[in-house]
Length: 351
Image (cartoon, rainbow, N blue to C red):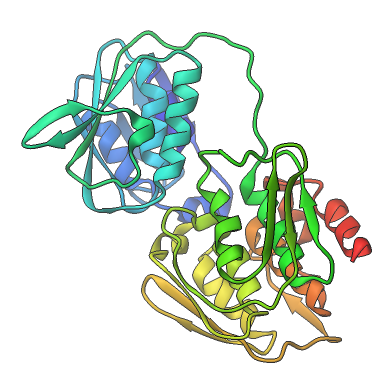
């Protein structure tokens, strides 16, 4: 999705394809938005899905509308591509609701760091007014737009911060295991939405210690269930769902319908796999409720990963509860964390 939008800002013919699951993930909204800027698409199988051939002469004059209902990736891709355009690009956020704003904030920070020229405007008292993007906490569709100037990017020295999504599995291990777990390399003031994992674990009762020099340490405590809106941090929903299985009361996770179109249907995947441990799981349209029951400690359980790296790493957390976790495709973690299993083994040995 990101590269489709960036390539569309260039010139020529591009063919986009992907693994079977990628061919099931919707692209129509992005393609329609790019089509409004003059980009043409020829779909090889189903309209709005990979694979397709895209022909472009760059972004034409807008404005163009995009939503944050399904994914932030459509908007992030167009924002990344817009500085490569020959003319100003205006992108309006429309739709009925907005999810995953922190990922857009990360995109804007990268654009700023590499000296792209843009401004963000919000509707105030019937007029568009420039607003510092760092001050935006909640997005109201129809009340936000981006104006990006041509000019491209400038090179710079850049240090990539640690990934809170991947840190979440180890922080969860500290909450449900027997000993604390310390994670270095993640920034406490990060814009990453998945930093919310420490707040969520704290709400559930885990012990938390965050310092500039020693990183984040999570201490095991008696965990309680909570109700939490995770629309801004969808990638850690599987992590929290597995932790919830070790709590003493039910946990309800809301505003996560967009998880159904990830690398797998992550809501259904979590429900099916967590149920194997003895817990009850209830699925709603945009929610999942985990009702803890005694876990099958001492037993081996075959977990399906659906080829989804986040499902594989999340289900591994059950090994801290005495379950012999067997994954049907452990190698799928390579998408985001090739060394996960070795690092996870070190945590298990430390427990």
